[in-house]
Amino acid sequence: MAKRTHTTDLGSIACQDLGELGAGKEGWLIDNPNLLCALDTHAIALANRSLIVTLGWSDSDDSKVKIRPELSPIEAEYISAIEWLVFDEIRVIAIGTSCGYLLLFSLDGHLIHKQTYTLLITQFIHPGRVLKLRVRGTKRDLIQETSSEEVCVVMQGVIARFDGSEIQNMLQQWHHDTNSRFWDRKPRNQDNDEFGNSYGRLSYQLWNVSKYGSCADAAISGIMPPPLMELQSSQRYFCAVTVGDDAVISAFRLSEDKSRSLVGAILSKVVPVTFSTISSFSKMIWRSEQKAPRKSNVKPQPFARASPLTSLKDFPRKGEKLTLSPSGTLAAITDSLGRILLLDTQALVVVRLWKGYRDASCLFMEMLVNKDNNVASSSSYYDEPVKSDYCLCLAIHAPRKGIIEIWQMRTGPRLRTIRCAKGSKILQPTYRFGSSIASSPYVPLEVFLLNGDSGQISVLNRTLL
Image (cartoon, rainbow, N blue to C red; front, side):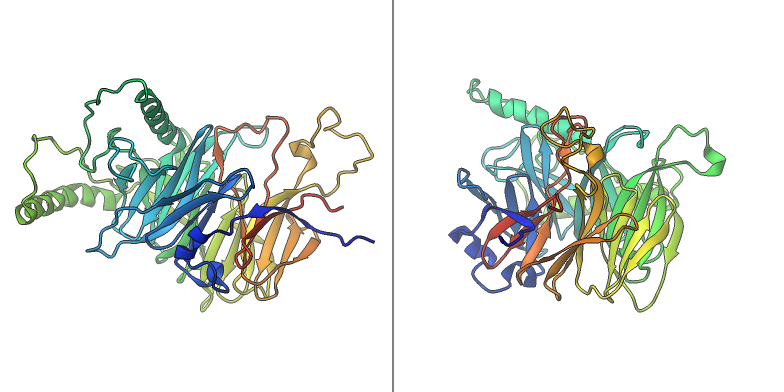
C-alpha cells in the first residue's frame, strides 16, 4: 500500500545566490530574525538587512534578481519588512525599513523616474521601524456589503493605510511610461518631489494605536459600523486589532476624520516648523548642489481618530503574531506562552483557544472537507470545485513538535497532522489586487511549506483523500 502524502512538491529554490542570505547553514531560514520571506504564486522573495533576492522554483523559471536598496549608513538603516504587490501583469516588491520608509521596487530593480538607481519609489511614512506590511482586500458579495483593497504599514503603535486603487493607478502609469520608452528615445521631463519620485506622493491615512502600549503586530480587519451617535456619518470606519507586550489583544475603531484627533492637531502646528528648520540646517552643513527652486510638497500627516474598543491584559503573556482570515472576520493570535487565540473581529470575543504551541505560526487555508466527489455538487458544471465547496481551516505550524495541524473553523475538529522537517516555514501567496472571486476555476487559499535546509517548496493538499 502506497504511503499517503499530504503535500505536493512544486520545486526547489536551492541555488548559490542564497549563500549571501546564509543558506547552507542548518536552520538558516528560521534562526535568523533578520531573514524575511514573501511569497507570490510562482516566486519567492527573501531579504536580510541589506539584500533582496527574488527567484522562482519551477524548472522553467530560472530568473533570479538581486536588489540592494540604498539605505542610510548614518542611521544604520536596514530592511525590516517585505511583501509582494501584484496588480494583474504588474508585480513589484514592497519593503519597509527600520527608519520608517516604504520602498517599492520593480523586479529588475529600476527606478520609476530615473534609470540610474535601483530605487523605484521612496515615501517617508513615520520615524519608526516598519514591523509589517499587510496586503489584503475583500470583495462585495452576499456576506460583504462593501469592497476594500489596501496596503497597511504597521509600526510600533502606528498604522498607516494606503488605498489599493491609488497604488494601482501609480503603478499603471509607471508601467505605461516604461513600455513607451522603448519607442520614444527622447528623455521625458518630469517633476520629481523631494524624494525624487516622478509620480508624486501616495496619500495615506495614519492612526495612533498605542493606547495600550506599543504593538508587536497589527491589522485592519475590515470596515465596521459607525458609533451609535454617528449613524448618519458618510465617512468609513475601520476595525483594527493589535497585539503587544502590554496588552495581548487590543481593538480600535479607526475613523477617516483627521480633524477630530488632538494629536493630529498638535502635529499639524509643530511638525512643519521643525521640518523646515531641520531641512534648512542640513542644507547648510552638506552644501548640496544648487538646483532650481521648487516648493516642497511635504506636509505633516496628522493622525486620524482611533477610538479604543477593548483590550485583553494577561501579564506576563505577550501577544506576538496575528493572521487574518480572508474575510477579516477571524484572527488567529499567538502569544509568548504557547497559546493560540481565535478572535471574532466583529464581536471582539475569543471563540477558541489552543494551548501548548510555543513559537507557533498560523495561516488560514481552504480545504475540501465535506465534498463527495461521487455526488454531483454545485461545481458539477466546472472542471474544478467552486468557492462554496471549500471550508475555512487554520493551519498551525508547531516547530517544536515538528508538525503542522489543520483545524476546521470555527469549532470543527482537527482534520490532519502533517510531519515536517526541522528548519521549515509555512508561507502564503500575497493577495492579488483586482482578482475576482467569481473567476473560474476558483483558486482556494493555500498554504505552502518551505524546507530551508533542502530548499524544497511544497503545497499542502486541499483534500482529505
